[in-house]
Image (cartoon, rainbow, N blue to C red):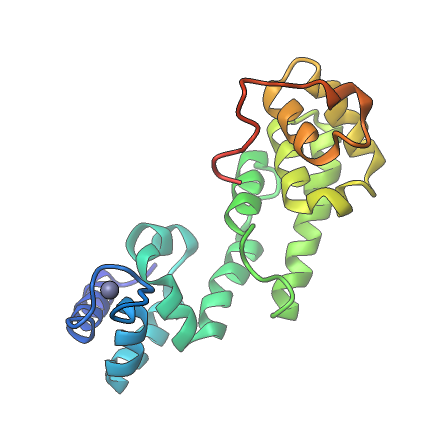
Length: 202
Ligand SMILES: [Zn+2]
């Protein structure tokens, strides 16, 4: 559990070092918050960043500090990835929805940079792939296909067969298969959906 006074202190320090920038994190005109904080932050803030990253969990990060993630990652990239390692270690694998949320949340995280995280992540993903098929979990199957991407998803024939059967009644799944595999899978080729084949969050 992170200390809320540390969070408040961190936000105060960021605001002080950020006084010359507009509200954007990256800005071509003024440099944005990122370069202003990086240029002006004092050593005490870096210590506070490290302290916070040691204790914060992923939902607290998203709740309190989502806006400052690029800055936190810049000053303490090990501390930042450790949040995800702790989350992976504590993940309740019997809770399929929690596994689903974890995979969606970590989609943009660089998996190659840290061996410990990439090993844990790989295990969770493999588990989710087999579980989505064996438990007939449509949302998890959709998530793992999106996370795997077109090239890798193709290697999991059981998963794709299951996804195809789901797509006969589930338009979200049909849209995913259409976006990735309309060249390969004849059955989804004529899918027009609702006219919008872009997934908002993808
Ligand atoms: Zn600006």
